[in-house]
Length: 316
Image (cartoon, rainbow, N blue to C red):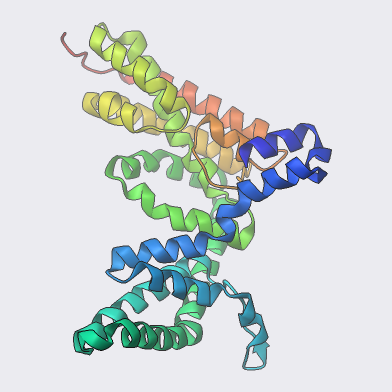
């Protein structure tokens, strides 16, 4: 998708060609099937059968739902996006486990899936999908309002506090929110802000490289910088900034300033992917320059903060 966006940006006619169309299909295909992928994998996590999880996701995503009316209004296929899928599959996995306890093994292969799909399907359409839609719409509205009204302050807070989430792995929990924002609003204002945390980390690591006299630490930084620039920050977190302490704070400061700038300029991405420089290919047209400026600001402030705060250098 990133490659396609870059080509189309410089040559809009490319999108109308056969190859351009194929690129568009390949790049966007994951989003057309993402509910099914989430359903299969969520069932694994919730202790259900992966294929039943995928089936439940397919039910609430089916285009045929538009032919069914409720209270005089047609149902909306895929309503609630990823959030609805998670709710529905969590429930269906629970139902499946409960039913399996009481069904004789000789009937399990037929009866358990049948009852699971019937019970969960009805509950999903009447209750869980509307609930998922409410949560999904609320998240999308909240992100827009918070970033619009909070502006640079909101971006400063989000960009500055994201690295601790990455450190603990909790940032993975935001993936459904990113995907849902894209499905419901067509763009993601949150990702370009959070991506600045990784850029602040790069700046902090560069400051450590300049100040340290430890050859092994320099080697570690040189190994981690390329992937850090490409949006994978864990090597620099665990190998450099976190063990040294103060540089981790400097990285957070860099992320805060970069996030503040992107929030103020309302930079949005049109897809998900790695952060760092690769994300520039997925940024909404007209905002790519602002995104790159945000990255540069995070680099510079992360470097400056770490250089000023300093750290206790490691012995060889």
